Length: 222
Image (cartoon, rainbow, N blue to C red):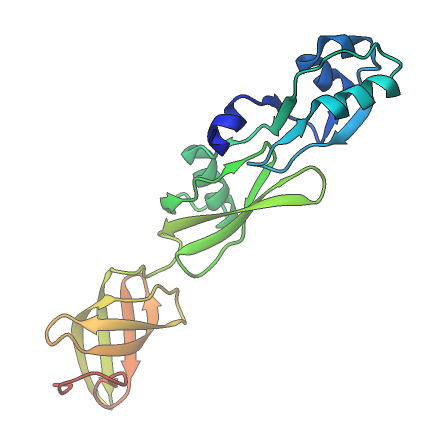
């Protein structure tokens, strides 16, 4: 039997503990036990907790119940993949309720019910967590677009300034950034790499003589 098959047959619980009431769902004679009595901690997301025949007989003695031939019972914590709408809402909240932020992709990890939160980042990959059961949490991630002034793959107007001379070229961003960040771009005319400082939405500037190529590039900067 695979783990997925075994988990599918388990009784789902939502709390932080397995109680006598949960045991009664798999072994009817435990309905006579105090329902809120804690029997064991709940398993972590994606894990299971199985009570074998011997352990169930021990529990029956604990609650002064008749011992019988129990069948093993397993439990799993309630966990589901995050809905896309919920991830997008949390990402935009972390970005200061910026409704222009787009959700490109996100983790499909099954998580328990809890509080979803992300930490705003200048990059495209944002780290987040689903907090549950007091101080426990499950890490999640999201790939976003629109949270920075320039995203990876964007076409950027790069202004090069040298003395009184000014020239504008087109390049494609290889790293994302917001105003003030230095990013890596690749020129579309000769495929050379260069670095420039983000100056606005879709704009960057180089204040130097010519275009400074990155180490390892081949060709000239004309």
